Length: 138
Image (cartoon, rainbow, N blue to C red; front, side, top):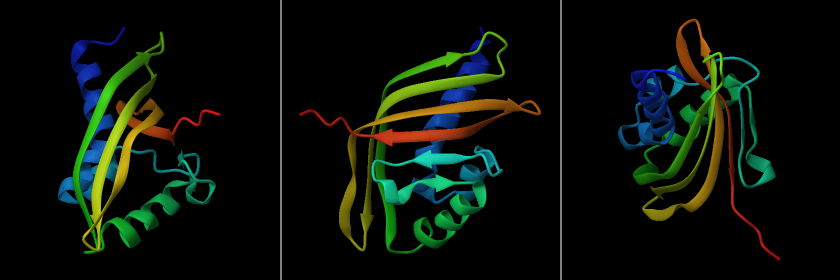
């Protein structure tokens, strides 16, 4: 089991994966994700899957840094965080509210299911994958 300080560090990274956008601190975002070809994100739609850090970096620079995009608020709810016995990997699940304006029009998610995995690499925690989804009940 990791020390409380390490748990808090990982929780901050999870929050900063979304919260970076409030100040457009792209350097912070890039510093907390794996910068390799194995990094990936599944979004609720199949068109928005991100594979590899360079694709993610390009998305950030092309889309989120535009004046048209302005993050307004977010909330991470019911965060569950588990560490491997060796303490070199962790996974999380939570619900996410994430809101922004695009060209002045509100957009975003409420109660998105968000899961992810982090690895400790060279003494530093980085996110290696994320998955966002919404329940679909018949």
